[in-house]
Image (tube, rainbow, N blue to C red; front, side, top):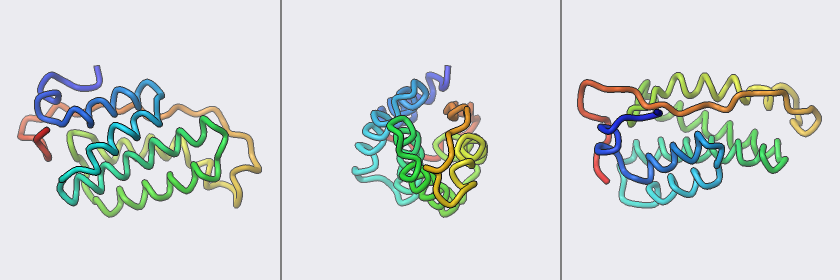
Length: 142
């Protein structure tokens, strides 16, 4: 299980649905779920976090449909948003660990001037697993 009953209570349904879809490899659908939440009235930090998550999902979607150049752009945009967020953990996600997984999966996109020039290596997309927290979550509501 990638999250607990407490996470289901603490976080918006769109966030949890996006995690399920992302972990199933349904990156475009995860983007849609997170975008629905992102477009609503959320805090500045949550908006930035969701945008980074959306862009990381879209990077994998672009790889699924054979667009490594677009994947690289989304990967770099997500990295920039995570850097601006500057949080180790947000909405129970270990952001540092998630970024490390992203880098392991996608750093090859940055290894050449044009990622269309090389064949994609075998890589393992990240799995999103929320941390069990003893305190209140960073963002609550639904």
